[in-house]
Each structure stands twice: as structure tokens, then as C-alpha cells.
Length: 295
View 1: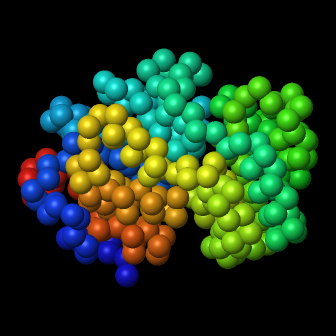
View 2: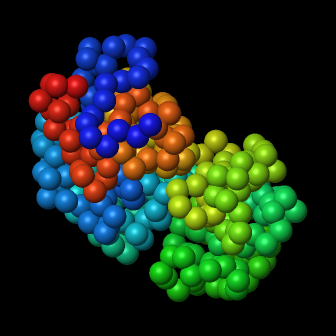
């Protein structure tokens, strides 16, 4: 059951009681979580993020968005300037602003895995159409719908875009987007995970039947774990927020985690606590209470 009225206490206990482990890092999804439905960051949330950083708690944005869509929060990354994009496929330094970001870490989807995933999913779900997300390019099949409000760099079948001798071959593939016009989103996700197996990681963050296919074992959680290890931060010292299936691993990994009041049922089940919806500043509500020592 969704709880839209209050922040609940944890429903599972981390290895060390949460109260005994002060947070050192906040990891938050963007769309449906930190951002309101109009894609804005509310003044209350901006203040909460700034207060966390001032208190010595790092804030990491961990999103399925590509780096070029990070202008909405680029001025809120504070000192470190880093964000995890593409569901863990890239760690990006946003200090330069839109269009000048620098890739600090890239965890690409090998082209052979990508081609195999496309082949298997075409067989399992006829009618699937694809787009290919690279570090600086976005390409799609001619029949891929206009979902992203941008003009693709190239139009071609996915097999051609992913071929070893393609004109895009010099640039890493971050993820494949797979869209089906008829299947129910969760059913499509289950079908794709069974068909593709361990050749790639398959998840979704859209309300439509749009899947995101990344490299094997690449997820928000695994890349966040790498970033935390570099900083000497344990999972017990991380507080995470999310709302969709691509957040589940991150919420399970973090010592404390919160599902938004508007979250997918799988997210509500995975998180150790619940907060109010994104439009009600659910992330800010929790950060304020954490800084006050009330959680």
C-alpha cells in the first residue's frame, strides 16, 4: 500500500541500525523522485540539498537520463560536480554546464552483447523498435516513436547502428532503448529479462513499454557502489530515493532507502521506508528530518 501522508519507519533493518550510522551520501533518482512532474526542482528541495552538502553529506544524482539532459539539476551538484547517468553506464562531471560535460567513468554495453540482445528480443517480442544511446550520440530506427523530444543523429536499423563497422563504432554504447507499441510495460520487462538473460541488464523507468538495456551487471546500484568505494563510504552510510524499477537495486543496496509515494509497487516493496510523493517534496521531507536527527 502506498503511504502518501507521512514518512514511515524502516520495514527492514540494515546490518547496522540506521540510527547508529550517520549518512555520508544521499543518492537520489530524478524523474518522479527529486523532480516534480513539471520537471522543476522546488525551492524546498533546493534548500534541502544545499543543507545536506553544508552538513558534509554528499548528494549524488543517479538517473536513467543521458548527460545532455542534466541541465535541469546541473547547478545543484555542488562541489563534486558528479552525477551517475544512463542507469549507471556513466559517471559525468557536470561542472562545465550543458554540452561541456566530461565523462569520468564509462561502463559501456559491448556491441556484441547489444546485437545479441536486439536479436533475442526481436524473436521474443515481434514489433519491438530500438534506439541506441551513446556517450555523445543518439540514434534510432526509422519506426521508433518520438519519445524523447530530440532529433536523432542517425536513422537506421539497430543491427546497422551496432555493427562493428558502423560509423558510430568509435563511440561507446551506453544503452539500448527498446519500445513495444502494444505490450504492457511490466510484462514486456519480464519477457525481455527472460529472453536476454545475463547478456545485458534490462530495466525500465518509463510508464510506457520502453525498456533500457545496459551492459551486464551495469546498474545504478553497481556504479554507485564503485563511487562510494572510491570515497571510503559503506552502503550503510548511504540514503537512497527512487520511484521506478530501475531504482530497485539501488534501494536494496543502500543502508536506508525511501520509495516515493508515487512509486511503482516493486519499489515500494524494495525500499526500507516510504516518503510522500515527488510533487509533495518527498526527498526534501526526508533530508530535513535526517539533518535534524529525527530519522
